[in-house]
Image (cartoon, rainbow, N blue to C red; front, top):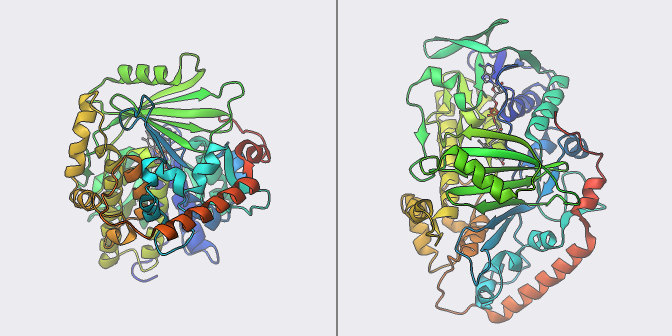
Length: 509
Ligand SMILES: Cc1cc2nc3c(=O)[nH]c(=O)nc-3n(C[C@H](O)[C@H](O)[C@H](O)COP(=O)(O)OP(=O)(O)OC[C@H]3O[C@@H](n4cnc5c(N)ncnc54)[C@H](O)[C@@H]3O)c2cc1C
């Protein structure tokens, strides 16, 4: 590592971002020989946000790379398997039925000269069959209450990609234990002051003394306690296109006989949408809404009614959300990770993914030195790009709606027009299939053509194709897909059966 010596990294914050960052950097830099000390300074008085319980599938690669045992992780966080997200009510009902589509983590490619999506149009299956049901194994497994694990599946492996639903408080606790066992120092103290000299942080002050350091990572949540001390106005708001700015979260007990679902449900309500995430012992839910249109009490009432009067509510919490990201994530000797760096509403469960991305990119950049301006610029440019691209993907879910029951939904189509990259593509995708090459030059870190197709075709934004594609090939593709489905259904475990093979719930305090 070149430049000024790096002896101590202080991470302020002990939520998912603080511990994911600590465990990753420690493994990356200190596993063979100790390059520097890593401290996590966590306030015993300021809690963690306590939400962030659904993941994308690539989080498995993070946990696996950290050497964590999957069964232990799942058992200690009351985790369930997640194979995708079921979107409900994002358009007007069709033939009296609630509009629904599934965004699974897989898309099958059974081979042929055309891809399966083109084949779906070629055979006019779009007229009578839901897109996700035509192309995804996860969707078929979901319908049968199955998960993609078989009795032979190795840790972190299954027949299709999957992520998790896990208890956020237990995850932070689990990662803390693992990080401390691996040599990270845990300091319980509240930061009351941040000392800055020549645009660099020199130390943080707590009631238990001062902690000097060479490099600081701000994982203090929405407060951005460190990064906001270095530059004013360092925030790019996305409120113009993503107006939801508050959430109310409710934890409820699972009902007698209720089996945890291996997918997240995202239901559009009057002024936003509600998530439902099943763990082994409870359901986490929440209403993400636009507080310029409804008050918190009204939102809470709407959520309670949605969940059902008979719900056994364990906890209810109101949260503010700052939707946007830093213009500069890395300033001087400080990098903001997690909510301190940015946040996009959790419609696609991307909070932990953005931490994974932020810290892995930080490691590769930091390896070249902590004072290299070109590396800092590279890091900032990429992180901004990732947030900007994610913003457009989330806007896509709203802007194709035909709902007109509230002002919130009537305003949604305009948000797509305000995102220039998306607006251009939406016009093109009226006349051609959405394909990987359409994303050339973008920063999409995880969501590309396969993901866009689920939302586009789930919301009915289908291309108006002039020429019929290879019909014969299309027939073969679907016959191969059917065979795949049959094999998968035979081999996979019921979700409940797989969960029972893990040890019982830890139950958060
Ligand atoms: C409504 C909502 C729903 C979400 N849903 C999802 C989801 O489904 N999936 C997903 O991946 N992400 C989700 N997220 C995002 C996810 O919650 C966060 O990305 C994740 O929890 C990381 O939070 P954090 O560690 O950055 O901040 P926090 O959890 O807020 O942690 C901040 C830490 O800083 C410490 N701290 C604060 N001030 C001080 C101080 N003065 N001194 C010392 N320490 C201090 C606190 O003690 C705490 O340990 C959601 C977010 C919201 C708002």
